[in-house]
Image (cartoon, rainbow, N blue to C red; front, side, top):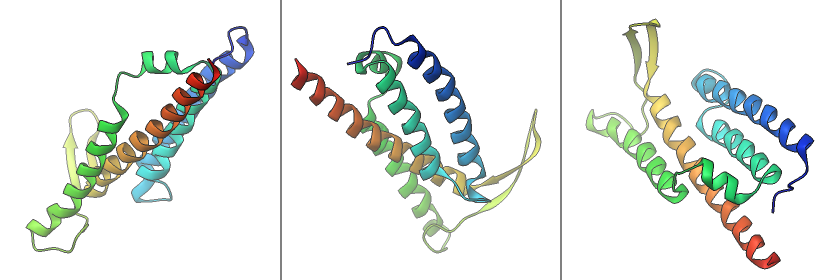
Length: 146
């Protein structure tokens, strides 16, 4: 499905994907202090992969990503639910956040919050679900065009 001779599109895509992925990391990391988080960060990553799919083809995208997207979605939902349920073990409300600081070797004193673990689960669930839908539609289109 990809365009074989569209060098400009493929070159610009490589640069744009790098920028989009860097921005998605920024959205994810700042999510528990500012707007963003796992959902928006995950959608930004999905937009980068969709751009790759449009510039190249499904076969190239599948070769670069060896992850089963359905399993990624399931793992993400499990991480998010288990993070929320873990607060019940300490007789706290569902999805109660615990935060503190950790002393890391290179970074020094670093803030850590359980919201980051929850956001990771949400990001995995969004990535897995959206990429499953997009690749399934792309596979159907490829079969239909043959």
